[in-house]
Image (tube, rainbow, N blue to C red; front, side, top):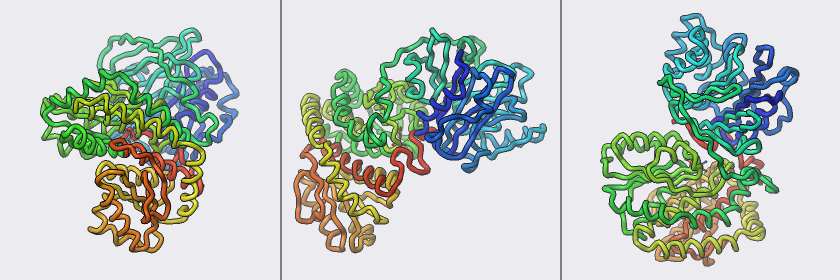
Length: 593
Ligand code: AGP
């Protein structure tokens, strides 16, 4: 949800460096983009455009003609104000005195704006962000740092904010609930600020973390402060072990297919991690008075799979709720309750808010996250990293299967059978390795070609694969833009079956277990009404019009069942000429409520 990138250092092409860094953050927002360069003549020049940054080779000459050592940039996912050049960031006060970029929402912007307007400020955009620039300017007589702090104190909401001033050779940055990381090349005295690490990986692997309610001031040195204190905060430099290749597309046409194919390895990485973590989580769950899994979107569907896994494997009732709906269940949270938060990014605002509210009640938090440096990881009591490596396509794929694998392990550990769970998952990973080959992809492409022009499709599953039917629908919706809906197979006859007509595609996820006759019978009900049945199953069946074979994986059935549907969604996106990495209206991590 909006990408921020900034450079401050000795190189004199800061604008171009920011342009290139922003391209690596485009997955966070791609409605519009902009860069501001502060040149040595105490001038700030801004360029902004509607549309994607990926095709842009160079900035305009007025940003690159003069040497520039400080630049800030932004790629936007619109919240307040339409997708227009005027609403694109950076935003500024008159004469570009103060220029800012912002990720998040300034909740009380309307009242602040009214007050500023009555003090003579004129606004040029419809955004909440512009208010911050004017708030800073309003207090500049107290000094840039103090004006910045004051503005942040007046603002309500979650955000990451960067500001530069025409007359000062520094960047100020602060965060409250939205990600912002500083990259450092000590020898070259270069500093980068970004919403995510891959943006500056080619320059440095050394980072310093900015925590919530903290700000950083960067010129030819770096200083961190608390937003509510005067004292400097001491920070450590941490070396991260991400490699550049894992954050790039390589030979693949899109990140989505690269990440789908990476599941051969990512699953093994998730399984072969610290056993102590898994055992500790299982112990905490065993002793908790009520465990609540929380997540949003795909991570939410993973959480739902978790409830079935714990029921079958550990004979334990675990609750699930979407992060955005969690507030209604807060009254049940006691200090002995437990929350398991699931997230790829670790920055999803709805999930973070659920955690924060639960923490206020003394609830212990286990997080299952991919980005180990994320806010979620930093505020949790126990962190189980899924080790999937950077996931850049908006549609989550490899993180999904790794998260399911971790929940499966914890459920087995809860039942005192961790070794059994590990064995099952290791076998499954090896079967996925055999399954993910070009022939398999080609076979799925064939069915995609058959259904590429349809308007609606349905997915049915039962038991562990009911949430997978819901997740399959998300995958198909977000990249193919086909109206797709997932149902529990047994629920069709209570209403949704009215939607089936001649040729309506319906994916039936059929596991080789006691649920098989039931879901096959549901598929037959659809077929009898003209439906075209695509079976995702270990065994073929006469009800299937098209059969996509998956391994017989027992409790790991959700993992093997979702992978061919991820491929199908990708192939449909390509056939329908959609960009699967950057679907319309979406952003990779949703850091606003
Ligand atoms: C997944 O394909 C979606 N893009 C989306 O539902 C995502 O899973 C959701 O926004 C939660 O994100 P998180 O895992 O980073 O918390």
